[in-house]
Length: 454
Figure 1 (cartoon, helix red, strand yellow):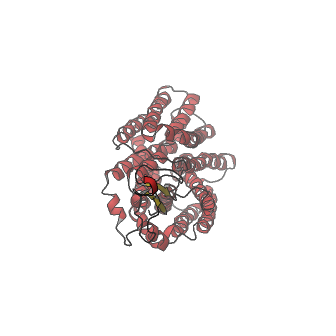
Figure 2 (cartoon, rainbow, N blue to C red; figure 1 turned 120 degrees about the horizontal axis):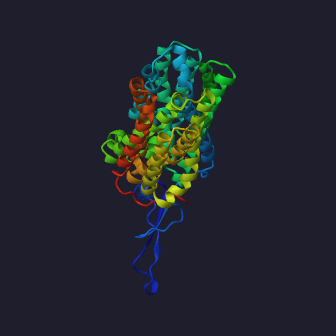
Figure 3 (spheres, rainbow, N blue to C red; figure 1 turned 30 degrees about the vertical axis):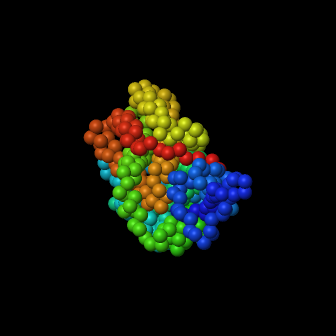
């Protein structure tokens, strides 16, 4: 992405042999500098002189404050969507008289929408800009939620959830990529995904209370979701009204032509490593959050409401971890930090699996959430460090959308295995995924140092 840059060069001649400062011809276009090499305002760089990159901040220009607020709200609604599955699955299963594997189709269906988002996110940015994404993504969800709220036959629920996947896949790609262009990226992404975790935390509490305390049908929860997504259309459209497709093309296609950035990004090994990593990570997160209530009711013999609260505890751990550890991660580096978090999570998961007590399991799963919470934003940071800026939207969009596909594929696989072997199989699956994540993470190239604080 092109940035406004001023270069002050030191001349080799001057009075009394002292160097003089010459300003280059302003008519000469300045070369693009990838975001991964940008440094905040007022920072000196070794070489020919002083380079000042006008890297946008969360509060500069002023409209960015409102854009961040709109994005944080959108991710809270996104989290409410993903967090609701764990609390609703037992009631959907009971309502439609389904097996584990058939119930798991609610996880698999959104994968179709995520796939479309992965392939066309960059192209849609060129055509309709971020303003168009802010309109289309939540509109897909409003339609989907409105249909589910009518309590249709189960095949209709499965089919319409693909539209939810498309909406969530588009916003996931767009807003992660946009925040990746700002200063203090690590902290902002931690907050962004903290709001996702906040939504996922309150969602099981709300849906479980509506069902067990309010004696309402599980589908009534989607009236609330439809209303929240409708507000998302208004806030996002207002905040990004000036972000048209033409503006996006001018800023991100510095050579004046569409160079097929999705195709270029897919040629990069980093894109594929991060995509596979996020597929496994998001699959782990949603599998654990999605099946934990069932596990606690059937294996730990908990009653419905306390079992539902374990899902809230898990997502609360994810939320707090993303916010708190998001400020620690950049101080020790993403590569070391994520490796340490995964090792600690493995220890917590072993406690969860091997100590068959309800309270211990509830605390352990919350700690797993805490230490795995910052992994998603750290992966986005890795992409921005390892790839040139013109590939960020395409690479982050593809990786995030494939990660969303993990939220569909792996919970479905867990349900299929539970159908054959029982819900207790959740624990060895989660442990194996944590170990796999650590192995994939260590295959990433070394990351260059980058200053996030302006």
